[in-house]
Image (cartoon, rainbow, N blue to C red; front, side):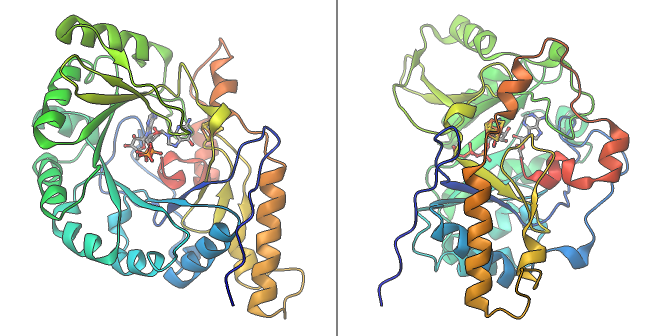
Length: 355
Ligand code: GTP
Ligand code: 5AD
Ligand code: SF4
């Protein structure tokens, strides 16, 4: 029997459901200033995390609803034991055209080969600074060397299309734009600068610490000369640019120039909450449905999956979120969520949402 063709689901603004970000743990081994600004955290209870079998089952249901791009995130996804086994299980799903991982790189060097063998397609490594002292200041951990080694490990393991993501904060690392471009060039990876976003857990955010895309471009032009945009239409969050020598880099301008209009992504937390926007405060509890909380509790696995598929389809059809655009329209912009609220619901944290 041939598998049923996946449906094409569109939300209220006509956006397709194509990309899913799957957080496999909320734990992290760094404490980046822009993501985890506090000392103490309320973590998701371990027994509530989805098992590999549950994660694979959910992904199968989502790919049946049109998802073709899957990205594993965290916290730091490599803190989840045996991640390569999960990758191997997910790689069996032929509907996934793009299986990617976002990592902070600390544990990547030893895992690069097993992940590649298991079927991981692509990796994006976060690195905000090339200076060890500054790395310690920005992440509150002493792991710079290990992160640097991740890029070489990715290449040796045979990964192509590797990206380096750097969040740029005024007064922290905004003097390193050209150094990061040079590092990317010599390591054969595409650098993407990310505007500091006023997302959920960024409790210390302020507009004065944001370096906008236009300012980044202006500073890079001073050094390299005329920069040209790469002509493309895609739902990727980064706009891409060309330096005069042909080097390509990207800028993710979610703060000053959001990409909500083409946003095809949604995200699942490690305990199975489904959010249809990075900024959304309400999600759908898919774990409850997976563990027998469907309307018909004694339903067969097939019937339960069909019911979950239905919940997803309805949820997506009703989606109107454009969180970043709404934030951009406000002139009283400050931290989005108060710390007390984050303590009450860890799902609102960026490290739980998966970046
Ligand atoms: P590719 O373009 O497929 O390589 O992936 P990606 O850019 O989605 O992956 P990545 O995890 O590297 O995301 C890059 C950054 O974009 C994140 O770290 C966030 O800062 C930002 N970002 C990711 N998802 C969203 C989103 O849903 N909304 C907004 N506004 N920003 C996002
Ligand atoms: N602004 C922009 N990007 C952020 N990330 C986390 N917090 C923020 C923020 N406040 C992104 C970083 C990191 C990824 C996992 O999440 O790009 O690399
Ligand atoms: Fe998509 Fe929401 Fe991010 Fe806009 S803010 S790009 S709608 S996830």
